[in-house]
Image 1: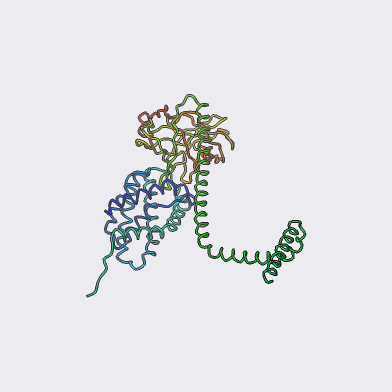
Image 2: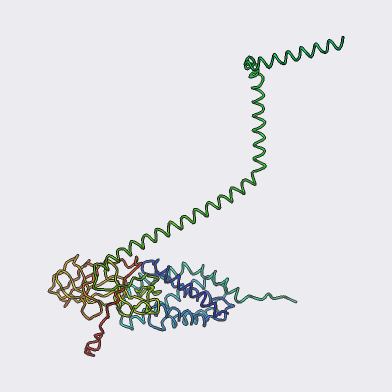
Length: 168
Length: 281
């Protein structure tokens, strides 16, 4: 169920991202809605399908983007790994964790993209990339992080309902 | 006696009544009737107005509900009409763009075009690609040039059955062989991460000026010749360097792309096998 749901969540997100958000840049940067959804889903304590969602999100992004194959997949799986590690340590402050993970996840995804593009011989100006793409994208992602967390949180509660504990 | 007196009273009463009626019909009692009726009319008006106020108060909830319902209906109608206006404005804009594209296609009869709508952009902000709603089902192939009525947009990078991805000339991996008019000098146009265009490899001896036109040269077989790219906006020339470079202002607004034309009768030439191995980048 959770795996099928990943497609129903990621595909509309991707459509919004490539159709709407990509046309509303902040300087040259725009948000990664798929990453935010993945972060919000992975941060939920009741969720047990974060890795699968990482794979599905990465594959869908690979299919749509001209980025070399595997960049998004690798980046998203690394993000899930970091979230899984962090979730065990910080679990009382989900909103704060979401914000911190948004910053980390964006830097990781875009940093990896930059490294791969340089490796493939693209003439990427690091100064331009940092100030006109990376930092505006982080700000954009931070702006959307909490609404996405709230929506995905409701979805997670619906998929993984918490059973009430009755004391005898 | 009594009977006679009663009859007399009746007769007098009838005569008075007939007289009064006659006087009233003759208009002789108007001032008198006004004197008596005016206060009555005033009182009646006041009573009736109070009654109407009371009736309005009692009826108000029903009227309010009806008015609210009517208001909601009218608001829905207004929203619907506004949506229609927006849709019609959009259709008008599209018609204008298509008309300009048709004019462009007529002016360049040597090429065959396939119009396509832009339906998205690459999700990565480091890459400059657009997605169009035409694919291999519409004879779109990899490498075909993409233009608008203004000038060069890019070329097809990947194709599915009913969609294709176009690499814009502003993408940092895009390289276009160009020529500068009026000097005719050859140069290489490269996209930048910032979305700007850099014209590189301009020989030092060539005289170029801001405002010079930049066109595709057709060299290398990647693009057809003489498609407008833009104008030179700034020149960087150092005497100790082998080549000059220049920034180019594209004639196409890449942020406002809605409909593009794919040149479907152009087949790019792959010259890679002809390039010696050591000189390949």
